[in-house]
Length: 460
Image (cartoon, rainbow, N blue to C red):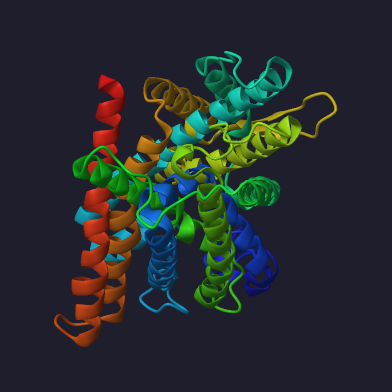
C-alpha cells in the first residue's frame, strides 16, 4: 500500500509519517507518566526525608520537582526537529540525541539509557519480591506476634516475578499498553494512599501518646562522615524517584498530532508532577513523622506498620500489580526486536509472526525473535537482582546515573542546539553554568554515597 500517495488514507488511518494513527490524549499520557514514575522510588522517600530532616527533606523534594519540570519541558520540544511543531518526529530518546547532537554522543546516551533502564528493571524485580515476602510476613506477624522470627527468602519470589514478566513481554509496544498503564496507575495511587493513611494514623497516635518524632537535622549518625554518606544516598534515592526523561519521547509519540504534541506534553507532565509531588511530600513527611529515627528504608515493606495486617498485605499486592506494568513500560525502549525489524526487514526469523490460539482467549501474534530476546532480558534482570538485593543503595546508584547525564545534560544540549542558542548568552549561562552544574553536583554526591552504601552492605 502506498501510504504517502493516499491523503485520505493518511488522514483516517495513518499519521503524517506513515505510522498507524496516534490516538493518545492528555489523560492517557498522564497515566503513562504516573505508571513510569510513581514506582518503587516512592517507598524510600520516608527514609530519605529522615536523613535530610524536616527542613532539608521537603525543600529537596520541591527542588527536584521544579528541576524535573524544566528538563521535561526542554526535552518535549525536541520531539520534532528542526521545528518543534511541524518538524520530523523522533520516536525515542536516542533518536532525538542522534538528530540534534550526532552519532558520537548518541552512543554515549544509548549506553547510559540502557544501563539505567536495565537497572530499573532489576530494582523492580527486587521490590516485587520484597512485597511478596511482606505479604507473608504480615500474615505471620498477625498470627505469631510481632517478635516472631518470620523470615522468608527472596530468590524464589524474584523468579516467580520473572516468569510473569516473560508472559507480559508478549505485548509488542507502548501503543498496546494503555490498559496496563491505567491499571498500574490506579495501583500506584492505591498503595500511596494506604501508606499515607497509615502514616497519618501513626502520627495521630504519636501525638496522643506525647511522642515527638523527627528533627530539623534528621537521624543522627555516629560521626559527620557517616551522616554525609547517608545524606548523599538520600539525594540519590530522591533523584531515582523523579525523572522520567528516558521514556518521555516514547510516551509523547503516542499523542495525536493536533494540538501540537509538545503543548499537550507540557500540560500532562505539569499535572503528573503536581500529583506525584503531593504524594511524595505526604509519604516522605508523614513516614518520617510516624517513625522518626526508626524510619524503615522501605515504608510498606520495612514493617514499621504491623496492623491492620490485611491492609499492609493489600498495599503490597498493589505494589506488585503496579510494578508488573512498570517493568514493561521501562523495558520497552530496550526491546531491540523493533530496531532489528527496521534494520533487516527481509529477515524471516526477525520479522515472521505466528498466530497462536489459546483456550478461552483471542488470537495473538507470536514473534519468535522477540520472545527469545525479551525472555533472555527478563532472566538476566532477575539474576542481577538476586546478586544485589540492596534496595536503597541500588535506587541511589540508578538515580544518580539517570539524573544529570540523561535528565539534564542531553535535554539541555539538544534544546540549545535546536533553538540555536549561542555560547555565553543569558539563556546559555542559566542553562549550562547554573542549572546543569548544580544538577551535576547532586549526581556526583548521590552516586558516591550510594556506592559507599553498597560496599558497606557487602562488607557487613
